Image (spheres, rainbow, N blue to C red):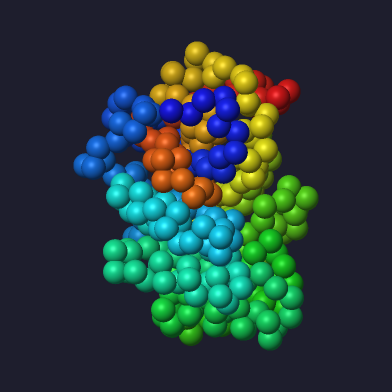
Length: 313
């Protein structure tokens, strides 16, 4: 069970709107109560017949621990995600040595063919971007076709985007998109969304960083874009702010039993969110995040109450 001392966690997820919104039948929440028969709810990728589970794994930082901790912590988290029907794994290019080890995890027999792997380009210069594209393909065992290719943090976007579009046209990427994790980029991000043909956007969004719901999330819904969210716990800062504070009793009204679930349920209550990404190397934390996908979600009045509660933390 999560206690106020659990301040180093980096996980969280979820989405849907409306008063008394429910993702699955009301149930006991938290304490590893999920059964093997329960699977994560899914949401459609707009404009397609494909769906994605609403909780995923943001692997960028956990993968950096592979040189010191080995691959088992990351493999354990993916194993837990798959056990409950999850399959979204978001990645970012790392050193070739680290990516080689991580790639062995992604294509291991127990995982092969079961994952939706979101890859990124995060570099300056066209030649370097092309090299990262090839590194991404090697990450998934030399597959010619990537599930999702994103330009991370809008980095050198004008240079990379024409190639990204060509790679989709050639069949080397099924979906393409762009990411941000900074409120300072939201204005430029919105302008890009309005002018370019995107399939997905990825953005920072949480109970303590709700800015995306003002313009970006409604725009994504209007444009029919898939949405991944990052920074559910503000890279761990969130847990430092809630440390030592009691979860409000009214959190039980939307089946919330921990501060981690408090943020994730806020995220998942927005109808534009396709999948919330969480970062962790602890399978038990991933199980807690997965539990956020079940039971009731907060309505708009409750979300306002949640924001007001944490704004002074």
